[in-house]
Image (cartoon, rainbow, N blue to C red; front, side, top):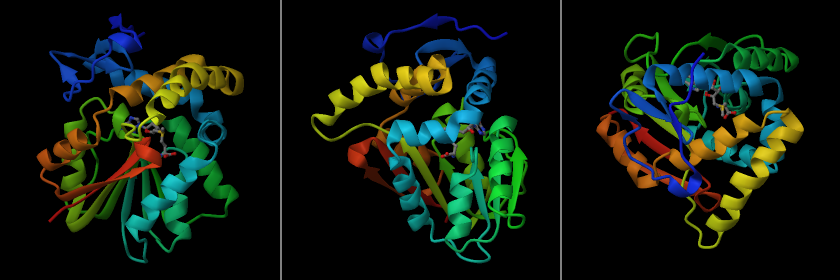
Length: 265
Ligand SMILES: C[S@@+](CC[C@H](N)C(=O)[O-])C[C@H]1O[C@@H](n2cnc3c(N)ncnc32)[C@H](O)[C@@H]1O
């Protein structure tokens, strides 16, 4: 059983660009051993898998669909484009990619429960080809160099223990000319929205988690993990450090979420 080593309050929290530190790392506002984090993240998504899609719509009032649509617009799906969707969970990005004209997607996720929900959703949609489901860690992708034309990662990277490893793996598996796209919660940049968003994240969201999914802790972790994630420019620098090029970002809904785009040249 993995145990948190310490916990901080939102008020005492400071965000550090480096996600690990001397064998420890953060799990929301808790400090935990690096080697425990992936299991703890897996535990969160085991708990939320069956209610994940319902909760997404409830807590974002459906807005996550618009953010994902924007990611797909930037991806420009077309036949023959091989997509790897990391942290693909229950398949939203993959389904949107196929609906928009793509025909070859691998959904890759650390959590079997999320993948199982995604697989069932695919069958419900009659999607039997063009989509593969694979379990594994974003930090160690089981693919040859230069395999994919595009790599997407939506609302996953903040959960990864060593973000630098995941980024360098993204670069490795992309073909030259390949497109990297990351959709993630980010730092609110709209004056006034930050206070409202804070109240929502730390008071309302965990209560919704309790009422709808009978799981307050996972949604408390969600709020904390969002706050711990680097801001837009810091994350842009991390992508540049992984030697991906032409890095840019687009804020969505005042910076509540953000799409970072980069290319393997
Ligand atoms: C918030 S869900 C996002 C799912 C989907 N991309 C979406 O946007 O609806 C985050 C997903 O990332 C997965 N995940 C977390 N850490 C991971 C890791 N190190 N490697 C691969 N997947 C990971 C979780 O299991 C979960 O399915």
